[in-house]
Image 1 (cartoon, rainbow, N blue to C red):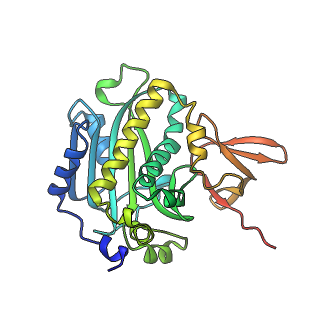
Image 2 (image 1 turned 30 degrees about the horizontal axis):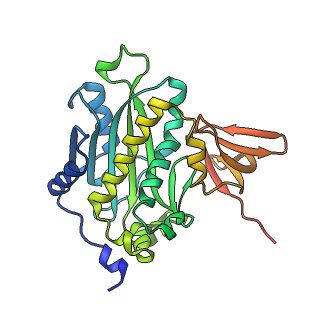
Image 3 (image 1 turned 45 degrees about the vertical axis):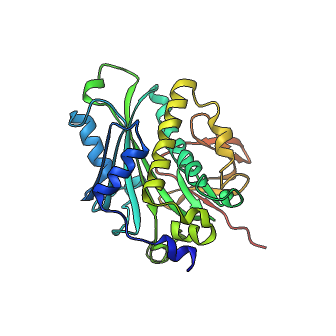
Length: 293
């Protein structure tokens, strides 16, 4: 039996998966997994704004199916039950507003590092980051992340207190059909597992809990110590470093240059003929430029 065949199994029932996650994430104050919902990010945003959940965070909410899941720039998350792991977490952070944009690449980096830790050391370098926060396996998208910030009802008097919602869609299977429907390269964990026996042993609860814990730890670290260490961490997983890239917005080229990492604000640094520039997170897509002989 191949590693791929061993890995592909039905997701646990929602209640059972929630129990496994609660055991793995003792610092999380609320953990729920449901059969379906419109959007886990939207649900947690509503809970935070209306104080309908427990006062203490973090929270985690996952769903076997999201009927209106959202990605960056308003894109829809395409999913079907069993083919994707879709979940969101809510965290309290105390940061000045100007630093909130840096949380998007940080969330992607933390997820990338967490997934790498589930592979044998020789294969970890095949999971990389494409700015701002797409996680890739061998240059094909493995997971997408959406980061949103809100001011919780009880926190409106604290100028630096925000609730950060981080949502992730991790492809478990179905990459081939997604690649065809999206007209771009997509990967899944089954493909990772077919190349790495250690990855094949990671079930749904392990994948989710490892990423959620990494988000929790990284947010605590930057809240306490700032973002000085993030650019060097990012460089260890940067898929674009040293490549010629175009920065596109709605199909229009805004910038072209050589990618040279990120700065402390999470911006992509490009070396251009006019000097180095910093590209902000937003509705900007970065795509490597293929060189022709």
